[in-house]
Image (tube, rainbow, N blue to C red; front, side):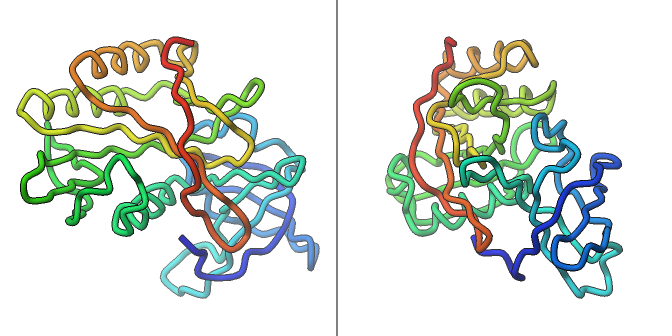
Length: 237
């Protein structure tokens, strides 16, 4: 997935709320308001003075001329903060059959209704195979060592998705929870049980029902975000 416009470097002044931030651009010194496409806590990624990269736009229908896309981390590492990016990255990878666990499926349909008033991120079909229901979760929390963690706050919606995937397994389908790590400085994945014990319980329940779980990290730079490699999941940590 490539960004539509060249990104501009700046420093985070503040995150006003879930969808609005303020950034001082490096090249001009101008302080601008930028859309923050992330409703989560963004723990560890929104400190004052953090180097960030924003994407400009000239769309007259948009209220803000900039969108916050990346955080520049120490050691030439990166984090993506746009929660819409994982579905775009995974969608491209599925269509290219670049995810080995799901490479046998030729038809990829996004946003298909299922469960109780929900839409699955991707429904994969192929003659002779069980349909595969795939949910994608954005991961950008890192607190210790090289652990990527999910979630970064309580997510009742995420727990509901796990239960709905379990229902698909009981109906005879495949169901896959795919965690996409939008950080380049992590080597393994685990659940943040202390932040949301309910989600951890739902995850264990889903795994017992036959829901598959896989995690992939990403290659990130100012040109875009792409799928990189699978990471081990340590559900018991």
